[in-house]
Image 1 (cartoon, rainbow, N blue to C red):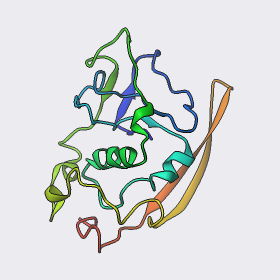
Image 2 (spheres, rainbow, N blue to C red):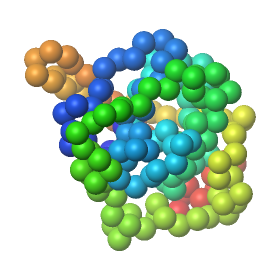
Image 3 (cartoon, rainbow, N blue to C red):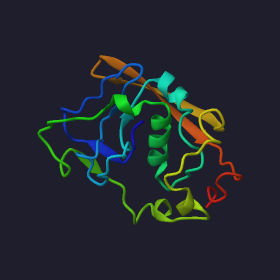
Length: 171
């Protein structure tokens, strides 16, 4: 999983496939330009599809306002996957030059507003929604090749807003 507004700048970052039971947090708190707390697993996180299914994906209750990563941390904890959490160490860069964060609050005002009970939901484990209940439609598929070594499928997804969980998602 990769935040679209977080650009890696250091070629030492490890994007390799971690294998079953291992969670690789590429944008660790030590190097993330904005978030620096031990339970942070946002930004760039790599895990197997089987481990993603094991934790039932991500909550569907976070719509355009962030903090879904903190809830995902609780899912990893419940599945005992935090003991295998790998983070980069000994990079030649630091928090100011490992990544470029391009999330502009002036352009994305909705991302910083709080609606309804969002504040109460913060950092609480969601046991009712996830991969098994998300509604979506695939609207496009593209293949990207990197250095002629690997091909990646990119899916363009239209998520369906579920008003019973997130009545603010139409805002």
